Structures are given as structure tokens and as C-alpha cells.
Image 1 (tube, protein in one colour):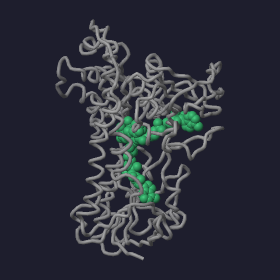
Image 2 (tube, rainbow, N blue to C red):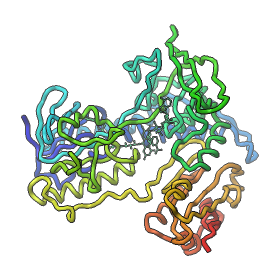
Image 3 (cartoon, rainbow, N blue to C red):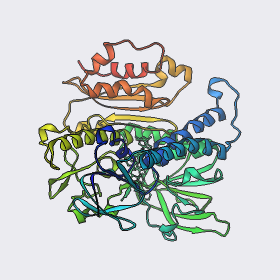
Image 4 (cartoon, rainbow, N blue to C red):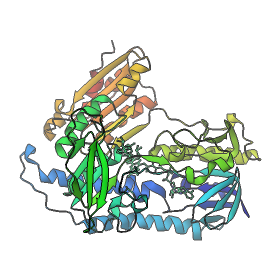
Length: 487
Ligand SMILES: Cc1cc2nc3c(=O)[nH]c(=O)nc-3n(C[C@H](O)[C@H](O)[C@H](O)COP(=O)(O)OP(=O)(O)OC[C@H]3O[C@@H](n4cnc5c(N)ncnc54)[C@H](O)[C@@H]3O)c2cc1C
Ligand SMILES: NC(=O)c1ccc[n+]([C@@H]2O[C@H](COP(=O)([O-])OP(=O)(O)OC[C@H]3O[C@@H](n4cnc5c(N)ncnc54)[C@H](O)[C@@H]3O)[C@@H](O)[C@H]2O)c1
């Protein structure tokens, strides 16, 4: 039995907590996979490093709208992959070496851990650990549906044609064909990556529209535009899969019944299948029940507003959680914010003496107001705050402003015909409730709207109280705000 002052489970955002403040303490870090977690190794960063060349390839393939004759040849996939992962793997290795070799007070357990009690755990190799204070930052993992013919053990296995986002980016060669199952973030981004780089890509979705949870205008217009650029099959799911002698996969489809008259494609033979069918908190492997820890219906570890882990509704002294394992938002910027909150509260708890000794008045609450997100697809999407439907359901006096990219000068330069900005506000308070953008650089030009929601800036003041550079693309945001009928 080895005792520590602090144990952190997971090296994604959890790894950022341990700094010089913890120098005099015995710290343990458990990580069963790559150091740095999902975002660095298999999430945000490598995907965006693939999205960028895919977007350039897509533009090169057809620039006729702006009277250029260009074409796209091919990608040097091994070079592209190696450029991306040379950078990422070096950061991973350095992060691991720093904690393992260069910090005397830190012990790294490079293996799976699970709870045996509220402050005790066991590692996969059988080592028993106790800790006064514990941070659960174990993230989430892909969910793979049960499909006749699919052996779950083959998903992400070496030489398997079945992938999640964990392995698809490290393929030795660019696949000739990919079937993507799912209609969410990962499907939209990988659909763009593979299609843009020249892989024959089919996206099968159970409903009639992409991006569940997005504002209806985004769902409608994104689905239309994405379907124009990608091969999307609505209203179907995989009925069975069969690996052929040449290693490719034959996939049979069936109608889900969600889309009247959906056309069921003939069995499709593809080189790779990508499951983009959601991610679930990695709580089951932690055996939270052994510690009496509460979990929510979707598997999240239950926390209070100070991110203290709950057991029977009350905080477990000195135990905190952050990020995908406990958060309502599976987003890196949220996990990072929550890590800052946990760090502050952990330090307050250490200052208080006994675990759980810090009163609520000494703790920092989490802030989930105006959480933004972007889908780095083609086209790009960004949103913050409520959808129009959510704002109406919440009883607001809803007013909506819109502007197409094609309605401002920079949109003319781009010859953009599909991009738009939609802002949702409350007429009486004049406050912005939500914003929904689709089009080039949506993830960048949304920032003043994120700021307006964060700081309760009235929508008309945001529009009229500052200069907007002319004729830059953010004028589309200014004009959507000016379109609001606030009286
Ligand atoms: C393909 C993809 C693209 C994404 N793109 C974006 C994006 O562009 N922007 C964005 O904001 N978000 C994006 N995300 C989401 C983002 O990656 C996550 O929200 C974020 O990484 C969560 O951080 P975390 O610290 O909670 O968990 P993680 O980074 O997943 O870290 C958890 C760590 O805990 C380890 N672990 C789990 N259980 C145990 C155990 N029992 N014992 C020991 N170790 C354990 C895991 O190995 C893992 O390393 C993307 C996700 C994916 C999959
Ligand atoms: N740019 C970003 O910020 C970014 C990028 C990628 C992922 N992420 C995060 O990762 C999370 C997970 O991404 P995701 O795309 O896997 O999940 P998602 O929740 O966005 O979408 C899951 C999709 O899978 C479908 N699905 C579920 N079960 C299915 C089944 N049995 N058969 C067919 N389809 C099925 C759902 O209908 C949905 O369309 C996202 O919610 C997001 O928070 C963020």
C-alpha cells in the first residue's frame, strides 16, 4: 500500500493541475494510455491538423467560383500523418518524461486504476494506492454499436478495418474508401477530412439531418450543404458487417424508420469503417460503486458546482472530478476551465488542512455560461448559447437576427452562397441568448458573440458601440446583430 497526498487519474486536462504549488507533496498520476489525453493524441489537435489540408485540397479541387483554374492532385498521406504525429508524439513523450523522470515528488502509474474505496485504488498490476485527495479526470471513450458480424474486440485492433477516432488517423496509407457511421461532430469532421483528401467517403446517418442538438437552421442548412459536398445516406444504419478475404468490409444497411421513404443502399464494400457514434464517460472502468460515488444516468461521475464528487448526494471529502468524465460538455476548453476550477478548489482544500475541510465560501464554482463549440467541417459551424427552440422553451421574448455571408462585402469576395449568421436575443433585456454560424471561419468570427454572452453585453451595444473593420468578414456578425428588432 503506497500513500499519496494527491492522486490525479488521467493526463488530459487533469495533467495541468500539478504545478509548483504541489512541490512539497507526494503526488501520483495514473495514465493507462498516451500522456496528454484525447485532445492531444487522438482528438482536437490531430483532427484539425488533418482538416486544414483537407480544406485546402477541397478549395484547390474547385476554385471556379472565383474564376481560378485549379485542381487537386493527391495527398502524401504518410508524410502528412508523420508531420502531424511527429509533433504530437514528441509532446506526449516529453510530458511523460517530465512527470516520470524529472519530478522527484511525482510517481507515474502507467496503467489502469480503479477504486476499491473512497480514497483507495488498485492498479491493473495489483499495486494498492491510497490518497488523501483525488482528481478524477478520466475522460470519455468511443461508443461502438452492436452490429451482427462485428466483433467488438476487432474495433481499433491492429490490422483491423474497424476504427474509431482513436486509430483512424494513424493508418499506414490513405484509404481508398471509408464508411462513416454517425451524424455528429466526429462524422462531420472526418467526412470532410477523407472526402477532401480524395477518399471515396460515405456517411450513413440514422435520421434525416446532421448535427443533432444544433439549432434547426444550422441542422437544415448544414445538412443540405454537407450533402452537396459529401455522399450522405439518411435514414439508414448498418444491419450487418462481413470482412472479405481481401480485408475490406461488406456492409449491409437497413432503414431506421426515422425517415419516410429512405432509400436503403445496396451492400457497400469499403476499405475502412469509422464509428462516429458518440462517446461515453470512462466511468465504468473506475468502479465508482466501490467508492460509493454517484453516477448519472449517462454514466457521468456526479459532481456539485465546485466539482466535488458526490456520494449519496454529499461531497466525498477531497475528491474532485473534471472534464468528459463528469461534465455536461465533451469539449476541451470546458475540460480546461474545469481543471482550473479543480486546481483552485484543491489548493483551497489543502490550505484548509483535512480533506473536505474547505467551506463552500472558499471554493470557486464552475461556470458553464455561454459554452461555445465549433465543428471543423465543410462548411464550418460554430455556436454558443441557446438554440432558438431552447430560448422559446425557456420563456424568453425571443427575437432573431440573421445575415448571409453573401450579404456583406467579404462574402461577395468569397462568392459564398450558403454561409449565414443567426443570433437569438431576448427583446426585453436586449441580451444575446445564442448565436449559430455556418461558413468559412465561423469558429473565429463568433468570438465577439461569445464575449457578449459571457459579459452580458446588450446586443445593440455590441453592434453599434464598437468599430467593425470594413470590409472584413465579421461584418456579417455586425449585420446579424443589427437585424435584431429590439425596439
Ligand atoms: C476526434 C475528436 C476530436 C475532438 N475535437 C475537439 C475540438 O476540436 N475541440 C474541443 O473542444 N474538443 C474536441 N474534442 C473533445 C476533447 O478531446 C475532449 O473533450 C477532451 O479531450 C476531454 O479531456 P479530459 O481531460 O476530460 O479527458 P481525456 O483527455 O480523454 O483524458 C482522460 C485520460 O484518462 C485516462 N484514463 C481513463 N480511465 C483511466 C483509468 N481508469 N486509469 C488510468 N487512466 C485512465 C485516459 O487514457 C485518458 O488519457 C474532440 C474529441 C475527439 C474524440
Ligand atoms: N470540434 C469539436 O469540438 C469536436 C470534434 C469532435 C468531437 N467532439 C466531442 O466529442 C463528442 C463525441 O463526438 P461524436 O461525433 O462521436 O458524438 P455526437 O454525440 O456528436 O454524435 C453521435 C452520433 O452518433 C449517432 N449514433 C449513436 N448511436 C448510433 C448507432 N447505434 N448507429 C448509428 N449512429 C449512431 C448519433 O445519432 C449521432 O449522430 C462530441 O459530442 C463533442 O462533444 C468535439
